[in-house]
Image (cartoon, rainbow, N blue to C red; front, side):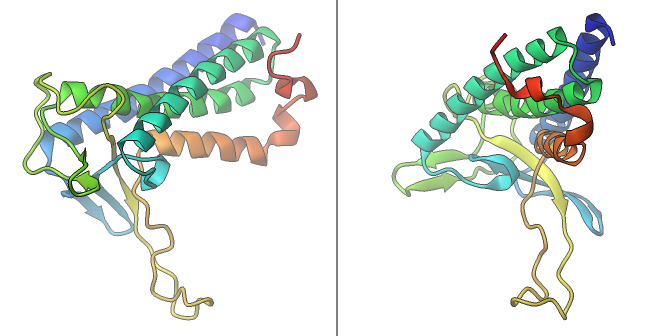
Length: 216
């Protein structure tokens, strides 16, 4: 496949994920109060939460942990971008490039939240030194560019909740408990889907040279 076609596939993949991810996040944050249940379709629910930590709602300590995580994300996205460029240049498998682009887009989508939402919106979940924890806010946020915290200190908007439970006969005291409690977003799903596809189709889409990252 031509280099230009591979580049086009990568760019389109990244743009689709970013647009869908950010449109959904911006709509939810500017339209609903924190913890609002927006949609309930049984197993699938849309519930607005803010996540100061990693993917799927996992926390990462205090504000310095948050900043450290944000910086790590920026560095990771930078190197993944370089890696995608190299894959395109060396004619890697198109589907592998799409998978890596999904990971890149997901990471970038969450970086946008962390980097900019604290500057764009007037309210959001913030770290309190007094309470030594993350403090929620009340009401609906407005994107008036007044800002509620600093650069790289904004929280990631999560909303997708797949609510299903272990059956009564499940072992290890799992009966009745949620199978997958975390709430996540499109960016998280994009990262996970990209990684899963690489694992499943590894032998078909990955060449030996694809993991010699920056060597000629």
